Structure formats: C-alpha cells, structure tokens
Amino acid sequence: MDTTAPEAGTGPGTGADLAGTGTDALPDLADPAFWRLPDRDRAAGFAALRRLPAPARFGDGPGGGSGGGPGRGFHALVRYADVVEASRTPAVFLSEPGVTTPEPARWVRLLFGDSMVNLDDPRHARLRRVVSRAFTPRLIARVEDDIRTVATELVDRVERERPGDFVAAVAAELPFRVICTMMGIPEESRRAILDQVDHASEHTGVARPLRERIRMPGRGLRALARMQGMVAELGRERRRRPADDLISALVTADVDGRRLTGRELGAFFSLLLVAGVETTRNALAHGLHLLTSHPEQRALLLGDPDRHLGGAVDEIVRHATPIIQFRRTLAVDHRLGGPGGPLLRAGDKVVLYYGSANRDETVFTDPDAFDITRSPNPHLGYGGGGPHYCLGAHLARQEMKALYRELFTRLPEVRSIGEPVLIPSSFDHRVRSLRFTF
Image 1 (tube, helix red, strand yellow):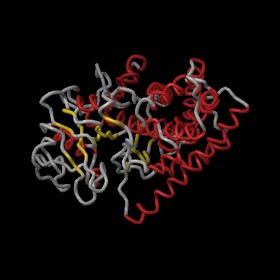
Image 2 (cartoon, helix red, strand yellow):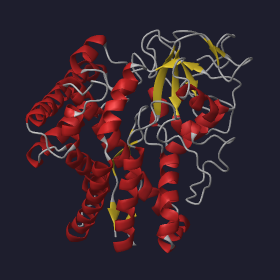
Image 3 (tube, one colour):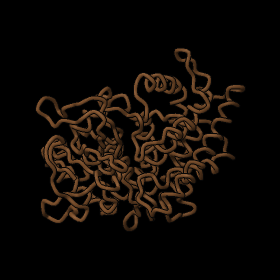
Image 4 (tube, one colour):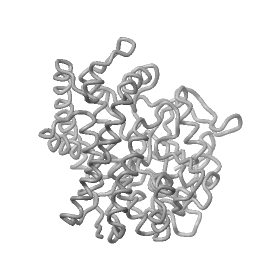
C-alpha cells in the first residue's frame, strides 16, 4: 500500500494494522479483513486515511485486492471534495469500462448490454434522456400513491402477523413491490424475478472461497440472463399492446429517434432492481436500528414528524450510506484538487468511497453523530453529483418517508432487537436481517 502522493515513494501498510487501535496504523482497503470489521472501526480507518496528504494506493500486491484485480491497484478517494470532483468531472474520471468491482467482462457487456452506470457521454446522455422522459408527471403521481398504499399494507401485515425479521417482512418488500408495479411486472412473475435478483447480486463485493469464486459468477450470470429474458419478453408484449406503465413508456418512447431495445430494457431493469431495491432496503433497515439506538432522536421524530421526517431520512442515508463505493478510470493525467495537487495518471483507477466522504470532518460537524436536525446535510448518499447522480433519489426518499410515517404513527414502540446482521461487503452496506418488535 502506497500511503504517499501517487508520484512519490511508497510507505508500509498491512491488513493487520486495523483501525480503532488508537495508533497511526492505516487500514488496507484491499484486504477483505477490513470489510469484516465493525462499522465503528471501519469509520476510524477511513478517518485516518482522510488525514493523509494524498489518496493512498491499494491493491498492487499479487491478488490485486477488492478495488483492482491482479496487478491493478487503485487510489482511494476518501475526502468529500475529492469524491465530488471525480463525480462532476466525467471527461476526466470515466465510468467505462465499469464502476463496480470486478469490471464487467467485454463479452458480458455484449451479451447483456451496458448498464447506464457503466457508460460515459454521449451514450450515457442519450440513454438517460430516454429514461428521464418516461418518468412523466402522471407516472410519478401514480407511483407516489402506490408507495403510500404499499406502506399501509405492510404495516397492516406487521400488526397482524408480527414477523420477526424487519428486512424480509418490510424493508425488502416495499421497494420491490413499488418498482414492480411501476414497471408493470405481473404479480405472477414477481417472485421468480426476486429470486433471480438475489442470485445475481448476493456476492457483489463479498470475499468468498476460491471454489465459490469459480462457481458463483456462472450462477449469477444465469440468474441475470433469466431475469433479463423475462423483462425483454414483457417489452415485446408492451410494444404490441402498450399499457400505462414504465416498461410501455420505455419501449414506445421516441426521444430523438431513440427508444430502449430489449437488451437495454433488461439492463435498465437490472440496475433499477439493484439500485432501487437493495439500497432502499438497506437504508430502511439501518434507519430503524439507528432510531432505536438513539432514543433521543427517535423522540424528536415522533414528537413532530412533519418537521423532522425529511431530515431523518437524509441523516439515515448519510450515516448508513447504502452504496459504499464506485470506481472511475482516469482518461488523462490529472492533478486532484487543482495545480499542486496529487498527480493521477491516465489509466489509473480510483475508488470513490461515499461513506468516508459522508463523515468528512471538514464538511460535517461531529460527523459520527446521528442527528436528524443536521442542517445543512449535503450528503453523497445518492452520488457526488454530475451526470450519474441517482435517478431514483426522489423515489427512495418518498419510500422511506412513507414507510416511517406509517410505521411510527401506528406502532410508535416499534424497535430493533440486537444488532443488524450485516454481510461483509466492500460495495454496499448490506443488511441480511434485523430482528424487531413493537
């Protein structure tokens, strides 16, 4: 691990030098052991990295680490300003060939199509225009009504059945049902699609034994192929007989002579399910636990939900940061922060750590505190701005606000039990399960 400026010499660092020891030891973000640490220790490790004069470099060893690949190291962008700069300078910090780890193989991209998150302009702009135009005011109004309906039904079920796991019973159900209704996915197809989503994404960013690294990608790709096949068939049906749903709008829209092909529709649906279901599910679960762990903040919210609900949602997203990282590739040599800043070379990989940026002491007062009255709260939970700012940010906020309003109004004593069961991942802040009661 190189802990100095990218053009300078190297410094020592090992995965054993874990954060939270009270020393100046630095964590190794390419070591899977770091991602198995408790949240507070990871936060301390990122705080140490933010104090360095330049982004540390990781993953140049034999295994390459979680941010690179064999022989492909990466610079860790852990400061707020650096993450924002990389996000808002897309001509320098490219999304292609991929923002996730590992990067999608060329044959996978040819077979399944490119996700918008992995594209740069002009292809990204053309595709995003088609998608943006499909979100008509009428569709958005209907989706907001559906969010309230689903939130009510889920709390009805909690009252009636008293399930034990908040993730399975509530947090995962709300965004999945909302997105399926918005897209126009028939009820009879939904369970099959959810199974494929689970298979396709369960190991993203998760360290696993060699035998599983060999076997699981094939299983994930088969699941992705089945899911995209289902959606492509629906797209063909909607071209023949359009309905009042998002799939119809996407395959019949004519924006500058463009509409989504079957492969593009499948890629967008995959992105929507992962970005729209996984992230909101995790935020909802973390939020219930945070409001349980901070009873003074919970009392504040319940005392005046109209005043504090929006702030609570933003603070949950900042504090939990459901998406941990995305990658970029340097198109040209670039000095980070302007003249005199660290030099990054064309072809270098950088990883944008949103959770670290959301704890940057130069931006957030007492950043480790959970404070639903925090204002301003310019968190990067939906990205650092620029062309790839999350399309679903408004939808996610509406879902969280509707669910918490319904839940805490009707069941004010609802609370988590114990700690959430997390899945160690360098990609997302994933919650496997969270016991709860009321």
